Image (cartoon, rainbow over all chains, first blue to last red):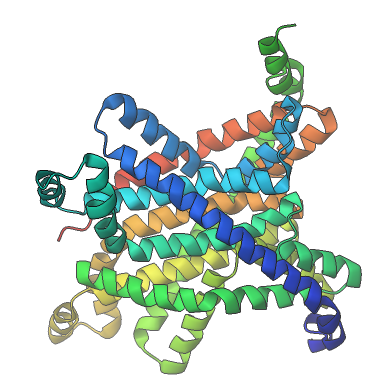
Amino acid sequence: MIETFLNPAIIAAAWPILLAGLWNTILLSLVVVPLGLAGGTVLALLAGVRHPLVRWPLMAWVDFFRAFPPLVLLIFLYAGLPFAGIELGGFGCVAIAFFLNTGAYYGEILRAGIESVPAGQSEAARSTGLSRLQTELYIVLPQAVRNVLPDLMSNTLEVVKLTSLGSVVAMPELLFQARQAQSLTYNPTPIVLAAIVYFLLLWPLVRLLSRLENRSLATRG
Amino acid sequence: MTNWERFLDTFFNGKVLARYWPDIAYGALITIELALLVVVTGIGAGLALALLRSVGIRPVNWAIVFVVDLFRALPPLVIIVLIYFGLPSIDVSPSGFVSTWLALAFVLMAFSEEIFWAGITAVAKGQWEAARSTGLTFGQTLINVVLPQAIRLTIPPLTNRTIAITKGTALGSVVAVTEILGQASSAVSNSYNPSPLMLGAAAYIIMFLPVVVLGRWVETRFAWKR
């Protein structure tokens, strides 16, 4: 078993390749998480506009990208757009697909957070002379973020896991590197090793979330 | 040919669409089959684990928590690849369909166990004590008193999670499952035209948009009342 799934010689050979992949996974996450958060913040702020011409297209936008599997979106950008003469490259496609997909999810979470802030907060802020934008940015959003922090963290965990889709469009992240190493060595050890790396990287966050979620459901019951 | 006509001819090519729509429809059937299997087995296993956890045998609970953490931390695509490319080394060769099914079912099991468990612990202690004092056994209390209240709490988060994981059926295309995305991708490379991809995209929207809208409704319908 050990010889097959955790072969020491292959671990030694594959480790540098995987380390490069891990580094790219971290870099990729550092790009796509802020991108998704930025998109989500814009969507959540727009959701505060009650005008039907904003409200309905916004809801359609969010539901569309929540219904669309991220891998399908990615393949569409990667394999479909070149036919229209638009070549974005693996990284560009991943960035745009994540912006659209995770932006919609972050947007829904932040919207719920904003709705949980009592109206008196923004009324009080406006009455002290802050502009609407200042009120949203300095008064409402910080409280909103605090109220939905577990959901934001949980979504961020999903986004980091989702970066493994980059392997499908030849982004040299952790899973891609592991599959390269596996096909070179004809042995599943690199993939097992990659799984262990993912687990060690994300386990602390999972533990923390599990505690936070149990607590929040318990207070609501 | 104007630009618009060229665009239509590229992305909505009538001939290509006519040639490949049966393939996409077949892919949709596979996607539905896979999704239903994942939902039933994943949620079933998650509920079973949550019930087992409520019995309160320490080593068993540690094992459950570890398994749940494992499948929450690993990306689904990594699990699929691990099953599909890893198991053949010990002479077990699951098909792409089985690999995808197992991987997604494990992930849904982990998430739904967490949600069910949170629901069970959220039911007030007095409910347990009152039920036990009327002479119900532990099992009866759990099934007839605690679980009905717990499940009500779990419906909104469970619905959202189930939708998100079910969309993962598209990952099957990586291990040669002939679901929508797999069918669409091979049709694109056979026809050298992206129209099948548009068809596949439409199929996903037709299947998942109603589910997302339903999820939105469920969320407000079963919202927690403080």
